[in-house]
Amino acid sequence: MVRLLSILSLVVASSAMADRGSGQRIQMGAEIVVSHSDAEVSWRDGGLGKLADTDNGLSAYRFYLDYSGRLADTVTANLVAEAFDDERNDSLGLTEAYLQWRPVPVNALRTQVRVGMFYPRLSLENGDPGWSSEFLNSFSAINSWVAEELRTFGAELDVHLRVSVLGQPLRVGLTGSLFWNNDPAGGLLAWRGWSLHGRQSRLGESLALAELPTLHDDGLFSGQAENLKPFEELDGEAGYTVGVHFRTQRGLLLQASHYDNRADPLLLEGGQYGWGTRFNQVGLRTRLPGDVTLISQWMSGSTQMGPVDHGRHAVDLTFRSHFVLVSRDWGDRRVSLRYDDFETVNRDTTPMDTNAESGNAVAVAYRHRLSDRAEAFAEWLSINARRDARMYFSEPTRARENRVTLNLRFSFDL
Amino acid sequence: MQQVNEAFSPHIVAVRSGQSVAFPNNDPIAHHVYSFSRPNDFTLPLSKDRNPAPVAFESEGVVVVGCNIHDHMLGYILVLEAPRFAITDDAGQARLDVSGASEDLVFEIWSPRIRDGRPVTTQQITASDSDGVVFKLQKKLRPEARQESWSDY
Image (tube, rainbow over all chains, first blue to last red):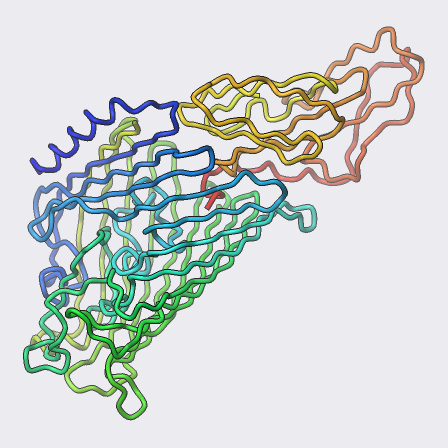
């Protein structure tokens, strides 16, 4: 915690020189948490528990820094950094670093280009600075996985057109990207499955893997390093995303996209396997009567890794998840409820490497703004899942894990 | 037309052809004001200057104003050659001084939310008969645009 506070004071001191009118914006936050969980050993500690944090008591939770600086009238440089303060990995690291170009429109067509390292256009719940959720402390299963394994290292072009249909102004857009450095993405979904948390992988991040039988020294996948590094380029081939989005002036947003990292599933480089991962996702965000926000996202895909035997890669699975989030705010107070459903299905027959699971999760959160700079979150998260690989650890395959957290978030806009 | 809380205020401004509009920024963050409504299109330089030079609008028409940084910001400048004009209050009423006007008057109303075919005009009315003019719209108004930053996504 001392380290977090010292980083914070350093940033406060250095940013005091920033000129508010010059187009520089620094938003940062620090969070402390009191938590209690009855969880299994977390996957972050080499277990197959679904929760990312199983520490009890008081701890510093995270620190984030979200910087946007204007290089020219239509060009910004953006840096987002995140630090965790737990025993696993407490360094400050980058979660996004990119240039954004938004030329002034000369007609109803709006164009935007991003180049660098950034989140794909996917999450509909992470709209706050530092890619924080506006609603809950934990992210949905889908967006927890996005935070862990997905990042665009490349370029993205987004165009949208303002049109009028039946007198209703609409914006219809297309997004496409080419990216590298995402070849191991999918490995965590296979060997660990889905998880729900608020942890974002940073540049160079190493993610823990359970000691599965096939990962032992004499196992089929002994080439895998102790940790999975999601942001590696193994085959030199670009992956891509294509998507459409559509929104009304009244705040209805619909989106759909396809992702394919086009990784070579036969590759093993530096302890990291290539996972050929592709998925489709659709999302909806809207406002219902009574100031209720509704968000729902759905994702379905597959990943393959390893040599082909009997027409199947050694690891071959499909994955699917969806969630529904409803939230209502009363000025300074907000109540949010989210239901997640998820599964992975084995398609290979490799012995001692079942990656099948199915489960659901419920989260309820209360957010209270205490002042311009402080807010409190209370959240209860309950994950109920069957994961067959738990039998390799002589554990029951089905487990319910609960976590209650009380967070205090301080944020500064400089 | 100032920028405050990531919105243009007032939302609608009416000027006579040739008049200028100022765009002071009263937000702590930068805005990049522009319009592609030809021939009144313009782009203000984004600079540290909170009070950029006013923009003169020469041609009659509607100028849709946006911010290149915040897509949800939307404003309208009506450039008019009509001898008299006014902007309605929250109750939808406006007072126009028509003293000294010629005998026959035609009134026209405009709003980005009106869906009736444009222009919405009255019959000719004599100035002496000016108890008040009421417009009844045939179609429901368009809903007010939500000024939410999420729509920028």
